[in-house]
Length: 75
Image 1 (cartoon, one colour):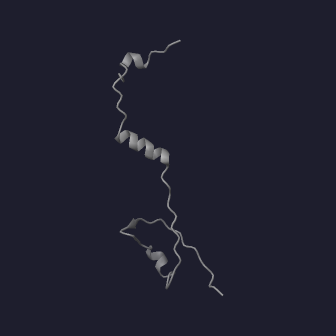
Image 2: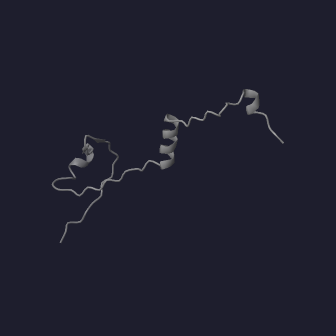
Image 3: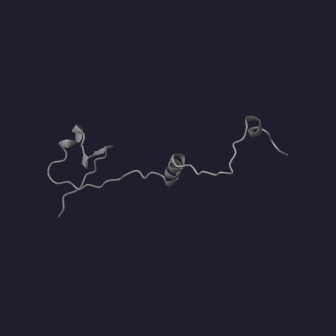
């Protein structure tokens, strides 16, 4: 029969493949532990915007609007 499992949750940064366990949990973790890593996924939309800002599309036909053109409403 397996020992019952407990869950301990905390935020940590991975540095050189190492996760530091906060001091308040270390005495609860003697011996072997089972590790499950949950990582927040960066949204693809954010990556696309960052990539476009770093590498904008060059269009030779593009001409920027003048200030008065920006606020001119048609119709």
